[in-house]
Amino acid sequence: MPPPNPVPESQPVPESQSVPESQSVPESPPGVDLARVTNWLDQTLPGRRSGPLSAQVIVGGRSNLTYRLTDGTADWVLRRPPLGHVLPTAHDMAREFRVIAALAGTEVPVPEAIALCTDREVLGEPFYLMSYVDGVIVEDASLAAGPGTARRISEQLVDTLVALHAVDVAAVGLADFGRPEGFLQRQVRRWHQQFLASRPGPADAVDQRESVVADALAQRCPLSGPTGIVHGDYRLTNVLFARDLSRITAVLDWEMATLGDPLTDVGLLFVYHEMAASGGAVMPEFPAEQGFLSPAGLVQRYAAATGTDLSALDWYIAFGYFKLSVIAAGIHARYLQQKTVGAGFERFGPLIDVALSGAQNRLGGT
Image (cartoon, rainbow, N blue to C red; front, side):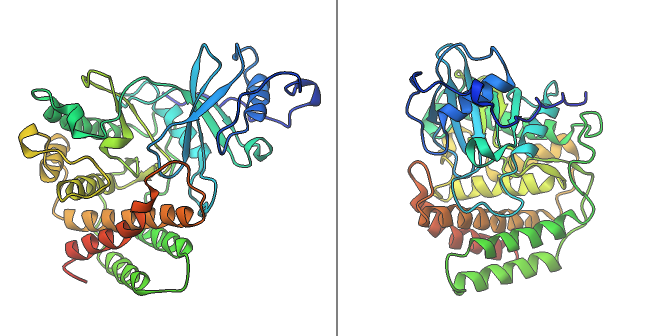
């Protein structure tokens, strides 16, 4: 089913439609001007709002900013780029909006795409509004301590990724969502450029290691299999579960989505959980007795469901580590600029070197 047409982009708000000075507007959190958002919402979706808007940051995201927006009756989620250090081609709100709109009605659970705003006069950057989906993110292994719970949620994590990669891109209107030809080579080049753009100062030993890894990946790119929708950052903490953990209610954070090689999602999923198993700080660590699938078990379940050839898996895992090092570098750069919102950002500087070591190990110690 083709995606619905986005709500028309907002135009500058006429003076007659702006929020009267006499109307009380709750304090705005960093990155959101509630008066401007109120004016935009009233113009874009007349009658949708039934009371004054308030917003709070939804903690956990380290890249784009996510807020729970409410008028006291209804709840929505607003997504916008970070406050500083926005890299070229990154944080594209229109792409996020388009992919979740396209996936509505498929077997991949996503929030409802409500409205997109590309008018920078409102918040300084494009943003979009989507439905609020109730649920829980499993950020602590203790949440999945019930009999069989950890095993079940790990299986659902894989099965939802299988469903995403099986989506007919033409049928949902995403045939032009990316350029699958030369995808892997282009990804290595782009992420290397992103790393250089995130560098806070002169080149150092970390930069040299990153360049060595990028060169090795570029020289050893495997041949890609069938094209699919790539989420780009698929992991347990980007998935929302029902509060009883019986099912996945939404896949979140689509900022890196494109068309390409689905095994890049599989390699990165492996990386996140391998790091968790070794005590890394990115994902919750599940004790073996809880039954959560091991990194290898996650990949094996995916391969069994799809029949995918995993002979080049080490390259995809190395690329996953490389990509994670660049993501960490971007977050660390914003942290140094004091442009982050929330806590925990101090962990991402050390993660750069850890992830590069992971990539080199999978490439045979480049």
